[in-house]
Length: 284
Image 1 (cartoon, helix red, strand yellow):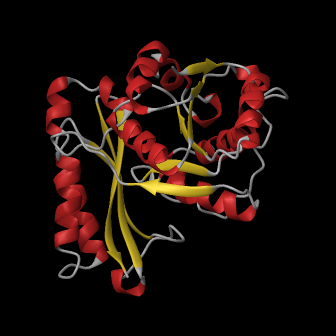
Image 2 (cartoon, rainbow, N blue to C red):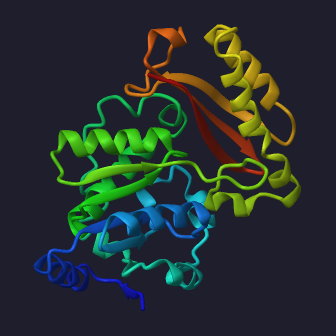
């Protein structure tokens, strides 16, 4: 039986009981509209911890566009039902006043070490401040031993890892592999907003990333980016960027061989939906 808890006080009492019984806690933060990608995080958390807590909270501070916030799917009942077979102990579904009792400025001054200046950060100013803000607050509430995030949001988990280290938060970040639809499209709650025809064609994004990886030793970084962007510029797809970056610093690379950890990251618009993906090109 999954307990759906809305208040911080009620959740804190449960967590205190778990701690008294020396239970380890794995935590999966989400904005709901759950899919197999989320479930893969839950499964890993269950394997590695005694208790699994998942949050469902659509965080307003990470949306640049209010219309995007309004359109974001809210399917709590279906989410809870989906989680039933997977051993989740608690779904934490707080309201705004529970997460931000002192207002949405709480925690918005977190130092992101410049990791938010590139890729998504360049196109969505303030987005990662909002992400770090809500994750910090949720970690304060849940106090988990381990935090589970997906590789799909490469820049996001890199920033959260930086925050955990610099603020000396006693939680281990566990990054899990990308889960894909049969076409190769990285699973995302936003995929539900795509037209079915577009969704079927969106495997082009992953195919392009794989092609970039295939040619990583025979083309320069500049050539790889031009090649990838040209492949992606096919209606209804409109690429925002294809960046090749250092996996530690997120700084753009001019030469893949100058880094021990190179990653290709991409953002593409389709049907008014922003789709992101990435592939590791090199990791020594």
